[in-house]
Length: 498
Image (cartoon, rainbow, N blue to C red):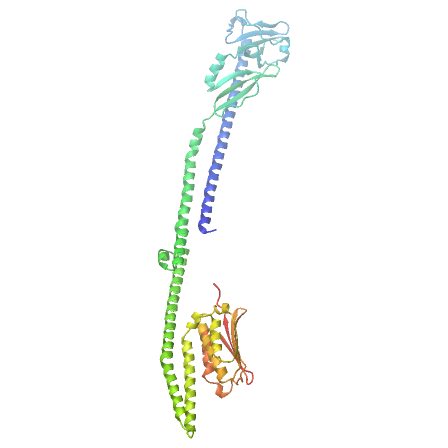
């Protein structure tokens, strides 16, 4: 999972979270709207109950007032109010002779048994219209009852005052579901026995949601604007401060040139520090590459010098040796001392040629470029003319630098030459192996050996070997005893595998 995908995932999560917050806010707005509607309906129900109760008390006071007045002064208007005298013995009688033309209320003879001494207000249904009655005592056995009908005209006038639609329902069925834009509240109606016979219903348009949403629209828009600004700002910041610098760093790493990261080097943040470190690393790598190029040129120069020496100096020495051989063949038998001198000179010349060949070979790491290190060591051993054994791990040898391998090859030549010239060896073994976190090179012979402490063995040979080992970063161990041959061991620390 790369960084770009991770940042995309983070931004996507932020967008999802922000949308979830908007949904939650929408839910809270819906809940608030529902609560507002419930509060409004409670207010309307309380208003209806207060209005009916207030009207009932006024209707009761009207009945009590009429009970104290003379019936002769009362003129009934059946469309507005009826007045009746009630007694258990006579039932309902008109309160005045010049008034009521309607039929008596259908309440029965037991009606008076349910009235309280101070009078009551109750409702009853006469089969056609819902009516409201108020009773007041005239004496111990008689009651005055005034009655009004809740006709559609009366309900319409009250509806105008209430700001809704008022209706009187008798024995109504269960409430039907109301549309979301309508409300309905009710007030129960009881007869003189306390039995529910109907209800007054006030209905109308529900509070419009738009004003409520309009009030919350500005904070919501501000929140949405802030959320999207935050997300866009975060995305731009991530691109400017993280993704774009990483792209430039990747470009520099791929090309090996620090030009792409130059704009980052002046920054004082982490990306600027990384860019500076990368620029230094690229500069060091370029310097190392230049050093390797110069080293390769030097090696090529050494190869050229070796070839020139081989083609000129060695050929001249060969010609000189051939001349000495011709001179020797022309000498007489009585010139043995001269013959010995010539033989000695020729041997010295051959030794010089051998040393020069070894020097030329040391100048030519070309062999290491044309064959493996094991093959190069085997080639050196093949020129010895004695039995040899070579155990070289080329996979481990590749962990050595070219310079180290060339120096080991030169040490091998010197050791082989010493074993043949001074040690009279008949067996030479060479090995290169990895031991733990080190690399061990060993060359051993079965020659006569020598005592390293002897004065004539404390020359430049061992010092040169130690110097070469130190230049290679290796540790040299030397074991030589008379009669037990010579063993030389070089120990290197393995280069880490990148």
